[in-house]
Length: 380
Ligand SMILES: [Zn+2]
Image (cartoon, rainbow, N blue to C red; front, side, top):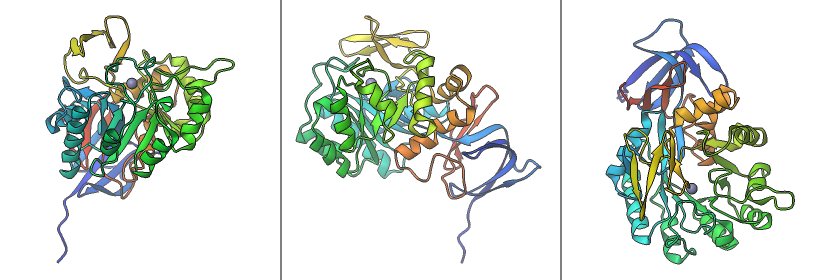
């Protein structure tokens, strides 16, 4: 006896398949997967007016919906964050824990393990940003908690029940053998919050680091005789860079420069979002101070940038409309590139056999609706 499948047909007026934008396509979804895509002039049961494209994958999300992962590391927080970001087209994310004590890291890992075990929609794993970072490039990370990598943190990073794990380290604060150990455990090592010189950076890449965390921000810059983190990030074809395209963290000119160097293949959009996305938050308590919002800019009282209020659809829009990146490339940098970075082969583009994670965008690239595994998770 054949198992009865739930089957839904959507009709997309415009559709991005990962290569080009086409018109009037019918998308068939069965049990959360795309089972066919074909030309179809007539709107079917579910017409989608706008541009249908692969759901956004955000590899760096500190908070959303009024909550921060660090401040309340629980499954409930993960759900709140995911829902807030799905309003802006995010269908999968790595909730990101910034530098904190071991207890908080354990709680965060436990919450992620619960989400992975329960197949919580949209949670792919976890990003630990710190605590093995550079003191001078720590940004808003707690100076008291920045520390060397011990067996305790290694045991957390190497847990096998966390889905895909990304760990941001400063290469001058970890050894090559520690990077090799992380990579051998399946961890994706990203370099960031670092003041390293080029030799140290290249050794870390040789050891298996494949990412750079928020390119240009909190890293040694490029000067005549000191190529630093930035030059390695731009030049080395082995690494994928995250980019915060809010027009505040990185000058639009530098975003274009990064795109010229890396292409969409090795440059991915991230939000680095705080609690502010999808919620009205003015001031956010932070360590012994607070984060202040001024327009879309979040800072400490001394002006240090403190994460973003950016969402993924705004990042795509900024990159395309203000930074001259073609729409198809900008869309891929929010979906296919992070999927490849995470070795997530069933997401990142809309094709037969892929998970039906998609977003419906209007002419201004604002999110009209968002679906995870074929189920609508937003209702505007
Ligand atoms: Zn950071």
